[in-house]
Length: 384
Image 1 (spheres, rainbow, N blue to C red):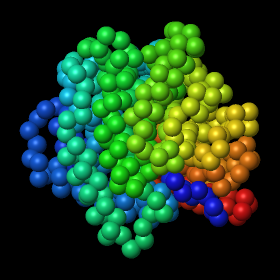
Image 2 (tube, rainbow, N blue to C red; image 1 turned 45 degrees about the vertical axis):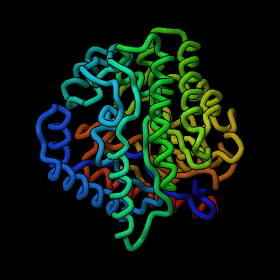
Image 3 (tube, rainbow, N blue to C red; image 1 turned 180 degrees about the vertical axis):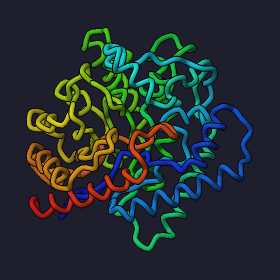
């Protein structure tokens, strides 16, 4: 992974707004409605080209395909793996359930996400179809080749075994550890293929923080931390063929505007996250609940040679951060880490993690990314 050797590099967490025609087609596929393959392929190609071009226009250094081809950041695996079917039902996060008037507001204003009732594991989970990934990677490469100015580096996202196992409930395996390990073994194929393309592999692992107030909401903290250790151990096995320096791990407490009053503190998580076979953490440090946790890096220093992508843009609000605010956030993280070269500027999470349910207006997303670039330039002038 590229370090911020002479300036603060900018990136984001993966998903970017999808055009409405693509959203409509993806939702129809999700409902098992007949969709002409040519129409979907054309919409994906147009959306991916647009996502790449907009990132470059906004000054993003380390970009991706915006996750345009996939219906969400983790449920897409059902099309590539065996064993998934039917519909599960995710319980609400503890903070959503605890505040009745907020829950009513949340349900009134939130559109239905594909994460609400995803399929379940009803058979053996194996990776059986690598063709969709190969097509996506080839298309992305072709689009990159068309650009007059390339990214400094490109990344590609894939889910952690834990978020698949928690989000797509178990109705087949004898235990959660068995299920997590089976998913990890299957995902190894995808991880290896992404890394073989020379891309930075971003593992999306919101489970490593969010499940503390979801699946483990009413259980002791130690039980949740045992789950974190289990998932990281499974992830490490799945990454055995990928150099740690080519992997960054995104961890968050859920990409929604809510109270977040039951979130597990970053201080409790970092010693466990540091066991991952990766070279960087991608963390939300802009939202009001976690903006103070940059201090954790002073108490729990990053492992040697690790980087941190510091969330400096909130992905759940239509406020556009002032570049000075962005710069301040970057500088605070750099001071806590002790070396600005190990800090990249990013976003708290994705802007459209489940197709069509992004909370930030599309035009505002690009303004936020431009503010990220401007803030990184201010921080560069002060830090370097």
